[in-house]
Image: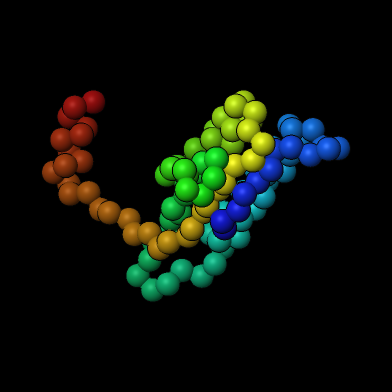
Amino acid sequence: MKKTFKLTHPKIKAPRLVEAIKYEVKKYLRRERKKALPKGVDFWDFDCRMGVDEVSSEAVHVYDINKAIDHAESKQLESFYLEILAKPGRRIKKNREESADEKDDS
């Protein structure tokens, strides 16, 4: 998904637009996660970028998208660019020694 969202509308208030944008993003993520995984892949991961426009967009973690949308609303931006690209993800197993060291530090 590569899209520029507008936060202004003549009839719809900004909070309703923000809710609609968040819902659209959530729906896209849900749809992408339901797709069949390729062989050797554990989960779908996402590369996300957000900014005022495509050129000035910066990397954002998938879980911080809602916060970034709220931040754009608080800055009273007219629009913002959001890019979400799905990629295959693989889990990394920890060594038993490393996990034992982490428990000792706690």
